[in-house]
Length: 129
Image (cartoon, rainbow, N blue to C red; front, side, top):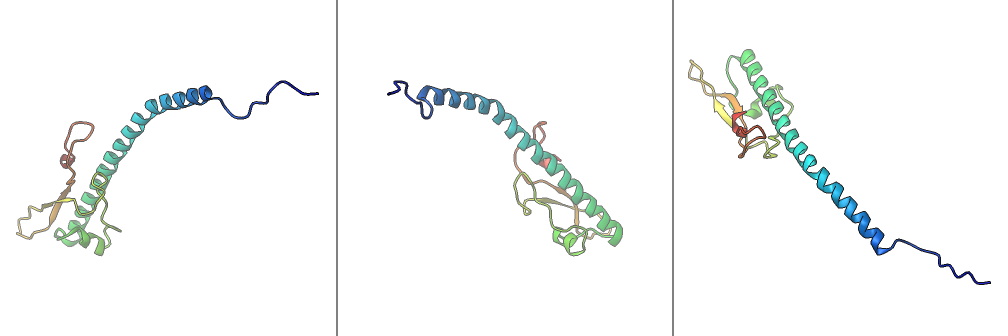
C-alpha cells in the first residue's frame, strides 16, 4: 500500500523569512546597547589608565625628587610594567605629555592627557580627563 501523505523535509520559505525577521528585530534592539557599552568601557579604561599614569608620576617624583623625562623611564625604573594604551586611539604614542612646573627648572613629565579627538558621552573632550 502506498501512503499518499508526503513527508516534509526542511523548512518552507515563509518559515525561514519569519525567523530572519525575528532575528533582525532582536538585533536592532540589542546592537545599539552593545555599541554604547563598548564606548562606555573605553572611557572607563581611559580614566583608569590616566589614574595609573598620574599615580606613577607622583610616586616617581616622591622617590627621585624629579619627574621622569619620558614614559618609558617609568617602565625602566619599574614604576610601570608597560606604558598603558590609550583605549580611544588604541596606541601608546598618542599620550599628550604636560611638562612639570618645577621651581628648580628641571624639565620632566608632570601630567598626562589623552591625545584622542572627540568627546566623551558626558560632553567633555577626551583631552580634559
